[in-house]
Length: 119
View 1 (cartoon, rainbow, N blue to C red):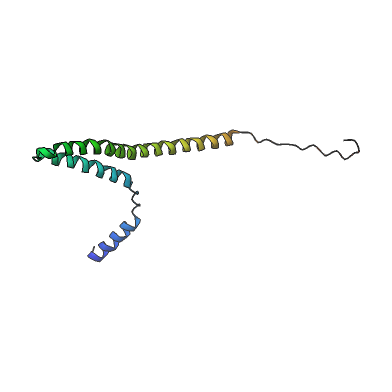
View 2: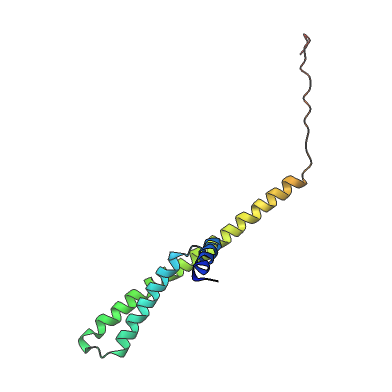
């Protein structure tokens, strides 16, 4: 096999490869918030902080901690909620389809209209 044949086959394999799934950006953003917060905690824990700044740093960490946790939790909870909603919708459609296939065909016969003088 020559180099050109190999490159041609490589292009064919690449074209026939299945598409990659789309990645959810919310997970990346949540991880970035979490990693940034813990990196900040680690930086403050490993360096000597002036005594005058200790109260400010403590207040900042106590203020930033819960919002970061809420953001990360909401991002991952939304994924689980969406997956559950999708599963519920799919189950409902399966149930409806099964009910339609199992039901008997109903025929309605119309009564002939009264053509006489008497109603």
